[in-house]
Image 1 (cartoon, rainbow, N blue to C red):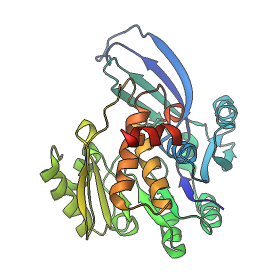
Image 2 (image 1 turned 90 degrees about the vertical axis):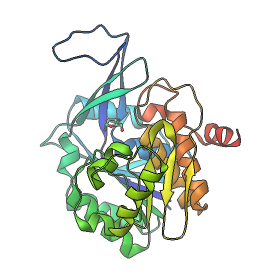
Image 3 (image 1 turned 90 degrees about the horizontal axis):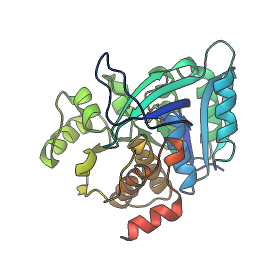
Length: 304
Ligand code: RIB
């Protein structure tokens, strides 16, 4: 029995740590380099699994050295990876990442196998969703596939959390299928046409998302906190104070935390706090899936 199903991307992340992000044409010396499994989809699955939800990840890798490396590195994660298939026609997804001394990051993604998802991933999602409560989707795999999976989830009564990252304008059915949509401020701008910088502006953006059919809009305002709004409730969650060293995948941890709390049927304000706490914890460790917090770490931060 699964509680959370994640359909999405899995990458090998090639991450450099640099004093600052390079300017065009500039050569910089970095201080460290790591390779860790990433991809917004896989990071969210690891977050959900480490936070205690039986979780299956569905995705695709290439038949290459990066794919083999990813599979070896993810074997110990508390995530069912039987839904990862190997595609001999495309390469494994890659992300080339720089993280600066202020913990900010810049990411270039080469999608490879992630953009080859088709009806086979949807069929696998259908099979696992028979017993699951939440489906998590992002935008690093084909939108068509994600929307087909969301349709299946709605038919089966699962909650669809749609993380519109990396953002691009969405068709009307995306808003109608997403019960929960979780853009950050930059993604919100792509969706609604302005960048919210405070709670009042986040509320305006949330109104637009709700008008388009989303049940619950969750607008992440980075270091300022998180605004959420549904037809019956709204509120703001203040950020947790942590020592951030690497912000890669903080948004993924947020979605994983939110998904687990909703799968456990926790009230919305508490679920948003779970997301915010998981996101904050992810910034305290290097890397992507490697930085996802455990349940013990989350419960300890929630008590503070
Ligand atoms: O959200 C962070 C993720 O974005 C990285 O792990 C990278 O692979 C890209 O998908």
